[in-house]
Length: 327
Image (cartoon, rainbow, N blue to C red):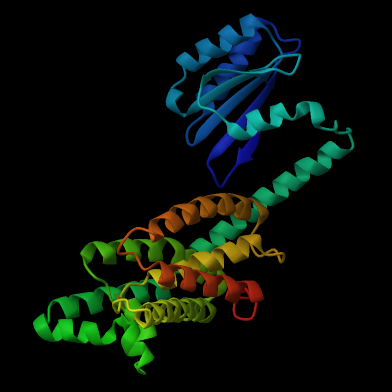
């Protein structure tokens, strides 16, 4: 049994060698009936057309057919997907079988123990993180909601105050430096607010539990300022070249700082996260970053705040000056 705990996947390997058809089918049925949650993949090693037929029949009669994938590995090393979902790591591993060096019997127990230790470490980490209530993250979300409600409900005065707090590049260059921070608590509309707050909730709770409150808040605020400065500098240069002044609002610069901080943690040399957690998080985070980079070039999005905040969050965490994990 091989597991991907962070992805909710499991792989059961069945050896067909020496099995009669009835015993083999019974073993497959036992595995499929025991499946309750997540994605389950079954790999039968050996066997011919009769084994393939038994696997296909068992899959059709399985109670959770939509969450299954069934494979057969022939004696000559060919992998056949008999039914159901694909398991890319399995297909990739089989494709490299000819280049792999066979394990010695002495190496197998150590590998099994290493896998067990990594699963235990990941489970303990997840349990510890889940017990830490992200009060600062919820506090930041509450502040953004309250500020939005106050400004939108105050009519013309609220709009004037919003303009005074937003990140106006021309005004920042004139000395109104508070704008490179206060803009991060303002939002253009309800959709803008909800999207940013969902992103903050998704990233912030994890990082706050990992870094501790003070370090987490330092990264968030520094990233907001970094994004604000990047926007002000870019806007100032645009005005100097004859363009129109720009105004920016939103927490996305600070949120990008959290993404940059998370990326630094999973790529850093010093191991902060359990290996299983870091591996899965690295894959998902890279996909999220690619999507968000593309979205940053959509008209109306402040890409300078995104990239400036993300760079600050990454460098702060990479430098290890503010972000040694909380005990």
